[in-house]
Amino acid sequence: MPASPRTARAINDRLALRLLQQEGPLTAGRLKQLTGLSRPTVADLVERLAASGLIAVVGESGEQRRGPNAKLYGIVADRAHLAALDVRTEGVSVVVSDLLGRVLAEASAPIGDDAGTGPAVEQAVALVERAAKEAGADRLHTVGIGVPGLIDPASGELRDSTGLPAWHRRLVDALQERLPEARVSVENETNLAALAEQREGAARDRDTFALLWFGMGIGAAVVLDGKLRRGASGGTGEIGFLPVPGTTGLPSATDCGGGFHSLAAAGAIADLAAEHGVTAAALAHESYAAALVREAVVREAVAREAVVREAVGGPAGAAERFLDALTERIALGAAAVISVLDPGCLVLSGEIGRAGGAVLAARVQERLARMSPLPTEVRASSLGGEAVLRGALLTARDRAQDELFAPVR
Image (tube, rainbow, N blue to C red; front, top):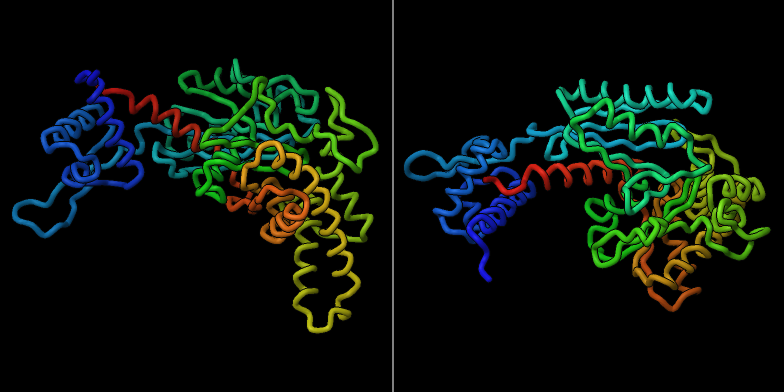
């Protein structure tokens, strides 16, 4: 059955808007070339989108031709302002952008364990309001939030968890109350990091991959055939509870102690480094565990480049042994993931994955090649500590554009 005129217009409008989003300002002639639509159809949609306030003339093409230069049309970026939050147990980071995702303001603030639920929520909300004011945003259209907890797939809400501060759950409601016109959504931080790596980072060429998150906690995000998979209860990727060899017990329904968490989370990594005599000084905004991994990678590189290995034998030898042991631990959990999913590609993320970088990724890939018959490329995150914020901003932008780019009547 052929599409109705209204449906056809909606399809054409969305196609033109997506092209303007991806390519930047375009002339009507260029839109005709890229869409394959007729000149009258393009002229009609340009007039319709301009009247709706979604696009505007932003310049001229500068082409050498008879008569006036062709007008360049672009999306009206300040038609909507968006905010993205990366909510951690110890603080909050926020960015505010326009409809095209250009960052206009950013801020962060620590929130201590002793702040109390009410003051912590107020501090976080005030941070968002200050960033919006700095960006010149009278109101926020959409707010995307990344958190370290599980999201209920039915309600889209953060589930109760004994491992998270109480202010995390209160924050979403508080933002909705203070920003009643905004669309507020929340997503697991690991899932957001995976979406960002898929769109802008290490997995841009992959429709199927898994992201492994190593930090204070451990998690995974699974993207299959281009779609993020959350599972029946939203728990896909809870690999901290994965039973693995080398622990002193088994995890329980309420405690991941004894699971993969006990081998490869930040606390376990710090203990492992101490066993091998590796120490480090943490940089600003860096955990001690991440500093240990970063320092070990540097020491091993120095050792490999040294003409006489004995000249740096003590510390470098300890660093290499520590990295060997860490690689073995990470590979245990990673092997379980690939044996079930066969993703073909793993991205190591979180503060530990970022600190280990390409060196740790190569080590894990080599170890997995000896443990599993399934070929798997292991890559380091290319977005660093911005992955969660970028993912939250991308999802906020998608949601805003889906609404604003709805059919123009």
